[in-house]
Image (tube, rainbow, N blue to C red; front, top):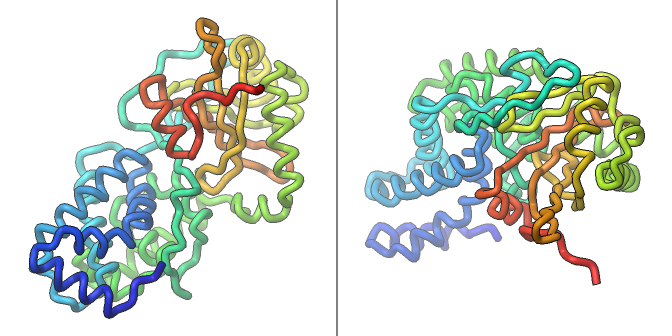
Length: 347
């Protein structure tokens, strides 16, 4: 629901008088899109949640300094940007295991997890909002959280990252962006040119959104079903048949990753295909994804274990990014995707 200018002005006036309820209502309209923005900046759902709450606290404390020369939305983005830039100064960028070294040799054991906050995290599509854009926007909302786009963002210097998102995803003008970043229009334009040049070189020619539209809902559903069934039945041949010859499979926070049918076969028949699975299709990072529930042998229940985000090349899977939240965080991660902590028992 879009708030009228009159309602917003009234809430702002009341908030300035100390009405916390009015402030919550005033800013609540923008919390969803601010969370998506902070996720793009930080690559972490938890960091994004913390950044939004921090930004809103800063906004509440600094409300008397808001002079109305920009919209409330633009002002909040300015505070959120400064908050995320502060975080990036103290934390490493979020990456995937392929950034750390070569693929694991055929038959190599999987090393222990690296649980430091260095890994990209999955983002539930249901958290994306219909935030207003303009002709300035170059990327769709879902396209701008795809795995390839998120890796690109994390590789950009923080200022270029912010400029690319504010200008080409959210559609703010150069003038608005310069105010949000407390810099000049010329600096914004220069940073945007460098970021666009990197994006042109780094991003695949076809986004996952374009691929999904070309395949159509029926083909996508069939692909997800065959993928899940192959895992559940331990059918390695069918599973490999769904993958491109040079497909990759990584599992953050595990540092090892595998590439190619030979290496994948050796690992699949040794590890994931030897246990019980149930699956449910979800959407994560603007891509086809499958949530995996692993059989707990003690209880006989299937518990939430992994979110597999599938990167497609035509009708084949070119990459599986299997996000493993760990036992302590699994329930919260699955809840964020609207999923129960354990697979529903059939009657």
